[in-house]
Length: 210
Image (cartoon, rainbow, N blue to C red):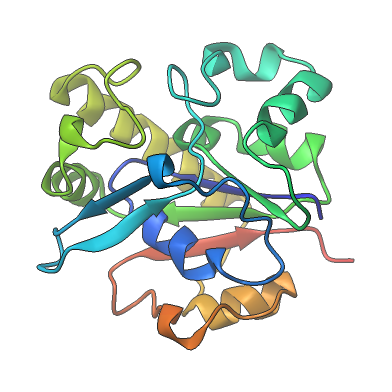
């Protein structure tokens, strides 16, 4: 696989899901830079939570993705590859993927999709607690604009993601060990172990079976 796609609404805790597989040696980590990190203390301890490139309309990458499915595969892959310069699987994460899961699956059938879900109000509350529009990376101010609009967008993204999970009959993962085993990738270091039930997050995986 060249890409691993990740979809989830703001506040879904998708960043923690990514962070806790990111340091697997199978991933290309060249999208990392100090400018592409964000620390917050929503858990009671100041921790690095956002890591690597984020893609969405009006963000650093994916800025033109308001018409995502109207772009060519070649142009989209050029955008995917923008922050990377190394080898390995490239994690491509975007909130708007929630609306385009069938497109992703049909256009890149060899590339798995991680789907991350929490209740709508829990997503909004967690995103606010994590810094809302004061989050320094990624910058949410362009596309999401204000809390009222953010609330509606979260509801819509979660709706489409849940419909896809239900239609594909996807089952939740227990932890990132199960996720890595199912993806067939090496584990990250032991300090990145994450139990999804204990951290109040629902994680699903859609991939074609070889």
